[in-house]
Length: 290
Ligand code: 13P
Image (cartoon, rainbow, N blue to C red; front, top):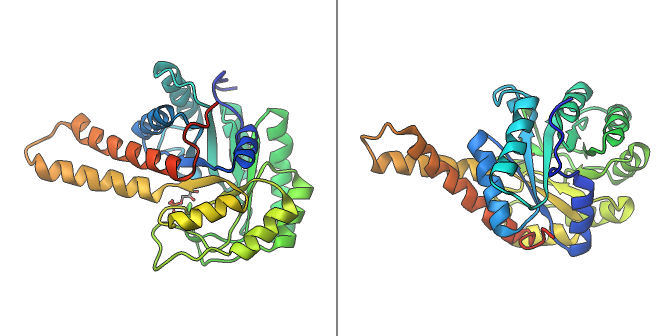
C-alpha cells in the first residue's frame, strides 16, 4: 500500500458540502510537479478546497502513482497546507488502474466506461466502487461523450441520456457523475452551448453531484448556471496549460540569453497559480475551506 495521508480527503464529503453551499470545487490536472505546488499554494491562499488531478495518460510520465501520491502528500506537509485536498485519477480506462491509484493513496478515482454500452459501463463502474468504497475512496463515472480529445480518445459531443445516468447512479452507487452535455476538452470552436434543460433533468433524477469536464473557455455565466443545476466539481486543464505556455514563451522572449531553467519554470508556475486562483473565485469555492 502507498502513502496514507492524514490530510487528503475523499471527494464525496467535499462535494456534498459544495452542493449545500452552492459552489463547485475546482479539479486541476497536473502536468509536472511544479503544477502541484502552484495548485496547492493557490488553494491555501484562497482558503479553498481543491482537487489535484492526474490524467491517466500522464501517470507514467509523472513517475507512477506512488511518486505522485508521495509528492502531493509531502508538498502538503512542507507548505503547511491546511485546506481540504483530494487526489484524483482522471479518465481511467481500466478497473485495474483505479485499483493501483487507490492502493497508492489516491482519495478519488474516475472510471471512464462512457465509450462502452451502458451495461458494460455499469459493470466496470460497480467493480471500481466495490473496491474504492472499502478503502474510503470516492468514484466518479461518465455517461455520454465530452467532445475533443478525452485523454487520448477523440470523440464528437454525444449528450448523456438521463435514464442511463439514473441507472449508472442507482446500480453502481457512484459519488459523482460526469454527464456529458455539450462540453469539450481543449479549446472551443465558437461559443460553448451546454444543455441546461437536460442538466436540470439529470440532476433532479439522480441527485448526485455532477462533474463538468472541459470547463476551460466556458463563459462565467454558463459556469454559474451549471453550478446552480448541480455541478459540484469543475475540471480545468487547458486554460492552465495555455497560461503556462504563454508565460514561459514571454519569459524566454524577454530573457534571450537565459539558460536558467528554474527561472523559466517559475514563470510558468506563477501563471498556473493565477489561473487556479481566478477559477476558485469563479466557482465560489474561495473561503469555503472550513
Ligand atoms: P479542459 O482541458 O478543456 O479544461 O478539460 C479538463 C478536463 O475536463 C479534464 O478531465
